[in-house]
Length: 392
Ligand code: PLP
Image 1 (cartoon, rainbow, N blue to C red):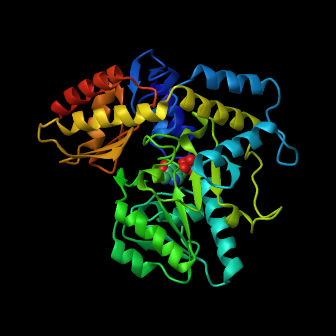
Image 2: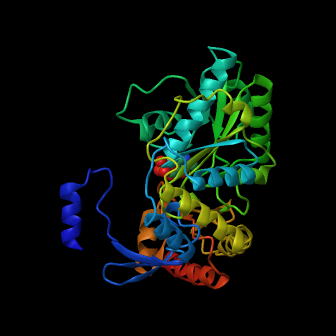
């Protein structure tokens, strides 16, 4: 392990610290490190492995496709790409799909579609309104959309045309949306911001303001989508419909795939050559995504996420040792806010005790377990968590 860490520091760009845990394999809710230690994985690759690690149906879909055709570019068609587009349109109620490889790229496409649509109405309609404390990715445009300066530091000049508005503040949103607004871009639950759900009133106002000013509502569902909150999109919990939705993370069960879905009306401005991605809609990615959606449907994982999520939230909220301030979230995306800046220490302590969780900022623990977890898995994880928090 020490040699691996040394090589990591020698050869890897220093944007990540050398990890303490080196994983080798995973099955279902469990992962195993290079020394054979078992962990209950309640982070799931940061909300990626919704169907668990190496779900047999996803593995066989990828393996089967790998032996037939791994890549062909968008110059030629593959059946599975169109099947995936049709299925995502039916699940979201949107009209057209564009495939890429990550959440940032899915958001980049969302912003480009919104700008082009807005310019088709008015060349000065360019502004994208995003929320303070949001996270939309690490490309230059998506890091600009991200309303957190810490991610932008050192990369100026940033592209113009973005305005930030306080999250869940309806009055400020009204001040910031106007006739120059091309789109309002939001997360239904701010993930990297600390698992902070939008209020119903805020989401409804965002939709109304977009309608009033001819702007588009982009929902970034990269972290919240694909059933994790109990609905396919977290936005559905609000009874609001977006014009553009971005997806990634859990869509491929760990195989990289991003998707941008938009209404037929928005899509009408995008013509051949207007956007593209060499690997987007790759046969392997589409196979992984189709198998993921099938598993979610067959194993009723959205219902499971809603039920076990509610059970865990209730149990965690009752852990009354004075160290937890509040438990937030929906379904199986939860944030446990601590009373002190102990999140990193607690995360490390949980890992020593065989439970992987995430930390956000210095006082929030993130739980995003696979959607296949049973009540027993939840009980075991919460016992480890409770024991670890007592030792803080
Ligand atoms: N949008 C949201 C809401 C995210 O949580 C993330 C990643 O955490 C991204 C976009 C960026 O996704 P990716 O890292 O796949 O580019």
